[in-house]
Length: 144
Image (cartoon, rainbow, N blue to C red; front, side):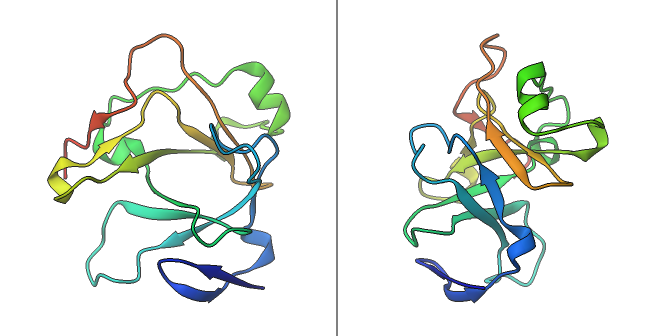
């Protein structure tokens, strides 16, 4: 299937790679279907990807695997989220953080308080809010 994106133009994506967020993302509950895109504008590996909305070309987020930048990061996924996403095995869980880039990449921050949780088997996702305040929503990307 083909999608339109603001950053990459028209792209061909596999329907099986569509991630469904039944409740949307925080503050953007109307957008339910997304796909992850790798950066294609660099030759070297980078820890950042794009979470692109399928229905709206202008809705896209830079995301990262938080453990790449903060290996001590911990997420406690509530039981009701595990049930909604049909998570049976912790190895099926993928955790991502939304990244905010203002100016140079060295100033990038990531939202560790509200991670994105995806069941890698069925591509169901949810964004959760961790209320323990151990992490903030603008944590420095320390290794980049």
